[in-house]
Picture (cartoon, rainbow, N blue to C red):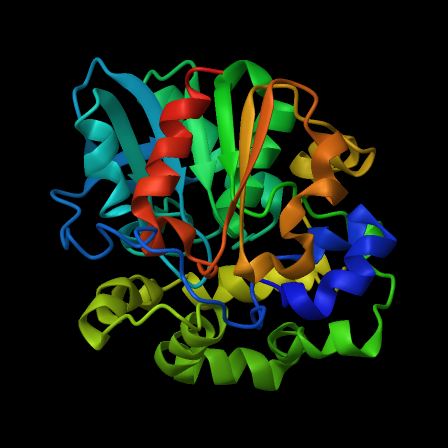
Length: 340
């Protein structure tokens, strides 16, 4: 998450700077368009949680809809979990889609199969988990949707493995991380939005997050979605996912890796190099923007990254957790992307 309003100047200076995105302060609050939040909070259960081998992890996931439906994978961000899609998934299932909503590594019941596996939060490691899950579930191709880490993961898969992706719906557009670009300083106002990332770069930050992750992440929810009036029950359902034994390690590594303060793993280097070279997305795409994106919500800065059939939609008055705040517009984007 990143402060989109504070980040606008740097964003305009170059698209690469957006690769730092995935959680900070929001743009200024705006009135929500009537009806955008319709259906938010209607469902409070993910149903039975299933498990499947997904490379180095045993991945937990929720499933909705008919087994023979067109596959859709919905990917959550930090600090959130699959409950972001508790209202979206039933909407899609009712239209005949098979909806898979996994807990990413470090969240909920998803666990590493070996104690010796590096607790790696880099973008291509997370993406390979999802591709491995698709392999296990015998899903050759799916529509991928996501926000925050989930948006980045969907974009990485669409760029690196387009044959596995029928279409993509990434909130905030193209936020694939570029390590070289991330080394460049931003204007002071933009840097201010990264307070949590610099905190995570220290051992004090690691300890503080481990000790206070419940309150820390609730603060992020509030600042990222200032007009979303979620209650404690809603937050606590998702907060349970942060008790995963690898959660702190994955989150800290993710942010340190993006600032080149922690190494990635050699087996992912070729993928990272391809992304760093400016990989584009040629599969059909509908990008979504919200108030969280600030002046960048028009999508112009990343338009050239999408070379296939494309639409861009703006959700004024909605914060960062788009699927949970505005489930019907998000679900409709998935439906429409399937038709592009």
